[in-house]
Length: 154
Image (cartoon, rainbow, N blue to C red):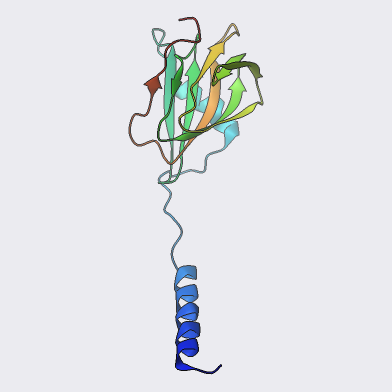
């Protein structure tokens, strides 16, 4: 039981355990913490151009996730994200969310998770621009917006 192999295994296990516990946390790429109660200020400071249907404000993130405020005036095209999972927190407005061909009502306070590769679209049915807090994992560093033939009646 007290063989050199077992001792070597125990020493290596101990060293690897200590080293993995000493690695530094990932660096954040934003200066201030992201607070959802700041979103009205962000929207005021970055007004949506009147000729745009959709508008995204990048809030920052890490290599593992990126954070955005997204606004939709009318509707999104039916699309998917091939390389990113998406979590959406609806902040204002209401309408229909179409996920993989199934339509559901969507309103303030709803949280949606849309796995990568799943087609989706939001149709705004409120009289004002709808806003949502969106988190992409991994972080959205390149455009990943693939249109899918229309379900939203474009």
